Image 1: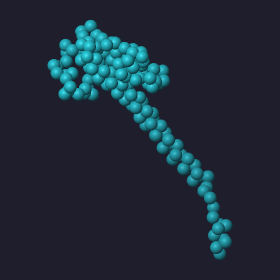
Image 2: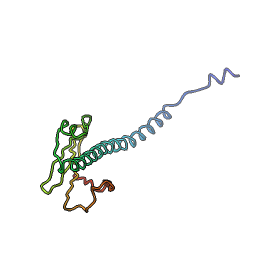
Image 3: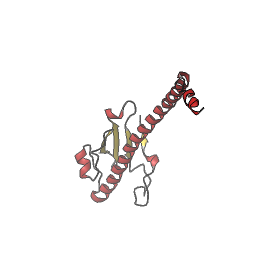
Image 4: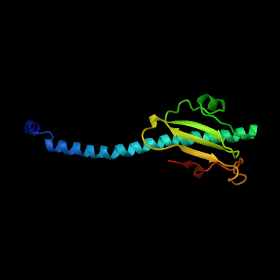
Length: 148
């Protein structure tokens, strides 16, 4: 009797296998766009965190030398204590502005993919409240303006 139950066992039918394949395909179709969005947000986070380091470096440089600096190459940023050698999705540039402030721009490279424009932060000393750049005042997220 035991031998007969072993022989009567059957595998999955073709319809059952197709149902499993269709379910896996639907789950993959949902997961790929979500994953792509997470990857793009991670790349943008890289830009904003490096821009934060550049802004902090500008603050320190202004306190030491009494002026803001301009930089656009890896060597110029490295001389200011910012290592951007591993960045492949953005190029960074900081320039002084005529009103005594500075502007930091992160421009997407071809490796970033299609879409999106530069991310820019501009510091205007005439428009900012006094004490904003003091040691007790943190850099807030809403100060970073995203331009497309």
